[in-house]
Length: 149
Image (cartoon, rainbow, N blue to C red):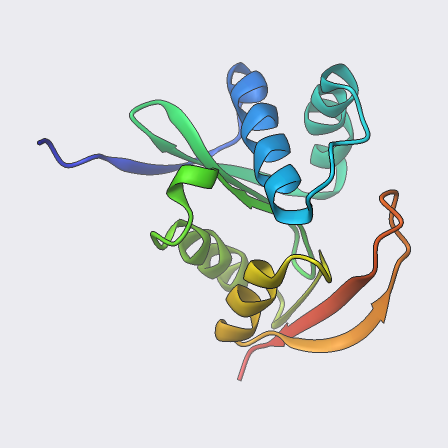
């Protein structure tokens, strides 16, 4: 069996459909709810809204999107890993990239029902700084912060 090549690359719209499909599947599995937005509006968000404030990177294995992150110097907006590729270190690669490009701290939100995400972020040095439910899904969420030591 050949070793799979993992590539972290800047987002390109040619990967839009794959990215949105992976993102939706991962999120639905994590929170146990169907995505509220249509695929079309999700594609628009990815291609036109998200890039205004965030850098977007993909993880590709053999040209297949298996992960994505959107971040800026102080915040991670999105971090999703393909369901079949979770637990392999891909999220850590993306998180390390965001940390390296931060101004020394990052905040992010995750849903309270997403216990895997909570374990992941806490394992990687994030601390809870708030709780609420100001999101479209109207689910309780947690605000995390990471500070460079």
